[in-house]
Length: 338
Ligand code: DAH
Image (cartoon, rainbow, N blue to C red):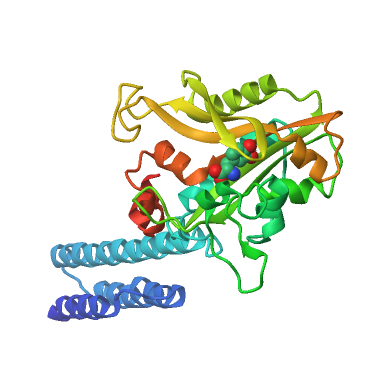
């Protein structure tokens, strides 16, 4: 009955050949039927023909071993198919991969939005004005008639048509707003401004400002002080100190320059604060009666406070950058850190 040994070897060889990766459920069922039913039956049929009980026992053991070997093998394939199916089912192709990079919001825009939020929380409305502006709104109506010396500090780019220029500050939005609405109101106006200004690393010909204007009855200098103190402390922390210095702007009277204690060096003196411990953050003042009258407001009844903030400089200090130009170098690795 050497035949049985031959048959066992043959079945085992065939089975190993057919047990490949990537079988479908149908293939597995076929495999199961062929080897665990048909072929086993053939082997047992052969076994029945063996008369010697000792040899019979030995073949019986060999057949059982083969059966066990095939059963284990088929169970293993089934398990593999099951887990890979589960993995496929639990994969949701509609979910976007989380680490796809879509770019970053520019730090100036980000900070601008945060500042707008501080003001809208205090009841301010946000107003936009055009970057191509009339000389009238940028200078004249702000108490800077033609040939006023203060125009020199804000020399800008002129459009071919007379009286049209790239706005040199967001203060032009003050005029546009006051000519449109009646007091009381509180507005801030963020945006880009332009100047013939390229003299050092702290100046660029285009930069961002945020303008503020509050007009109503009995608006006083203490309102201005309280408002700007609140604003700076919200952005830079409660321990930041403010200093109001007398200054000059044709459209405010009195005018002030507002410094804050240098957060880079804790007011000890460093490059950023020119070793003074203070950094100038804002220009501000009480709206000049000529400006109020010029837009048709009664300057006896209404008063106003105004302020202008250079966002680039604020960003520099806020993010601890060394140069304003860094904000325009499109260095994404820098954006990632801010
Ligand atoms: N427009 C000024 C500038 O660009 C900043 C400024 C100063 C705005 C005083 C104001 C103000 O509204 O009252 O330097």
